[in-house]
Image 1 (tube, one colour):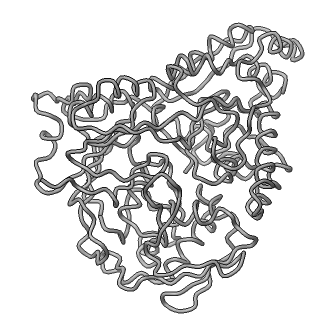
Image 2 (cartoon, rainbow, N blue to C red):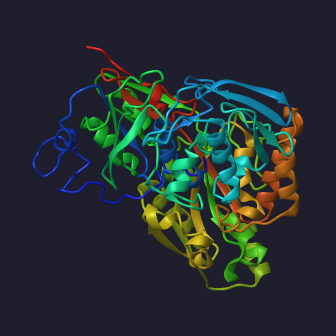
Image 3 (cartoon, helix red, strand yellow):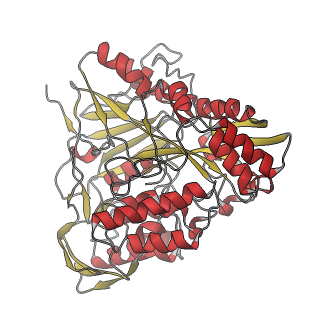
Length: 530
């Protein structure tokens, strides 16, 4: 998934009635969880790093949305919990690679859609996968090589690819693009099968969406039509707390029992851990960078963009924004994933003298630019540090913090003309364990969608398709390294960090289950008896 808002999203007020997350106490003085809910049963209280905006798998924006989708829909396969990336069967009774371009699946019988929409069939799988491509949705890159889904009978189908797709097992199938929706229900809700936003027409997972209050909470309860393995919790209550520092305070106050924490707080959590808590650090699959819109009139000259790249001192940013605890990025692909570069083309510290040379080549003076960022502590600190660094080469930079609702549409042409005003921005995505996931969002087809740099390269696009069909990891790695070279050489990117993913959870409440990167797998989480 693209967007990782952990630690770099808005600090908007999250709760009505005077909620104060810092102490977990609302105006009445009652703990938040007691004030909002008084339900009985086995309940998991978790924190999400963003609120929901979409529950349509084809139009997902954040990982927080995908985490909920995993509970309310079914997929052919799902991620395994643990320290190694892997997958296991979910809605599929059997799935196999027939040949490099054909994957045959057979559905389990008896998976029902709510609302009287009948049993899940292979036709629903075909509709769901092909819909992502047909609608040219933001998730289309995950099914870029999908040709069609052929039906053999009510429960059996064959996924047919144009060319081999090396990413299929760990990217589209167990993630958002692999969610199966009801064809009947979606077409009844929207005749064209389009985006149903926050109004799912039918559920097919172990849980249903019982309640959602924007910027307050999401409540999932058991699906009465679910006939599969019974999940551990009667309810899952998710609080959207974008600011990671506020999330830490909420954990201390007992408002949540599972959350990620900031890398700069990790040492204090370990030296003075909260009672009955487990603290784990997971390798991050995220990547943070400063993007530069090459189509903006002030930034069309590559010399200006190069000057900005060379003026940015990455270690200094990491020291200020992450207390020096974050992993330095050499590109988009993180360590441990095929295609990770040993070093970037531009040294991490940059070079002010070289940056000034590029300013002179551009022949610009008194240049004033803007940088957009989410209005939380981390991203604002990054932007302010870049502001100070660019001032050393005579560039004035205006920092424009934004809440998440306005930030995540800035570069999207479908949302108006805001993209024309974008100049610099602090951005963060989350990847998956295949190198394609770290590059596919920057093709020409993604200009005006997720490619806010408006970076364009025919060679890059060719490599993006070719990389999915290569089996040899060494050959594949060289290809993705070249793609990152092209990104950096364009002057449109200054790579910063992959961050880190420390997680804390309450051992008296939950046996936690996570992906290798620390993302919660709610269906696998179990309550602690007693």
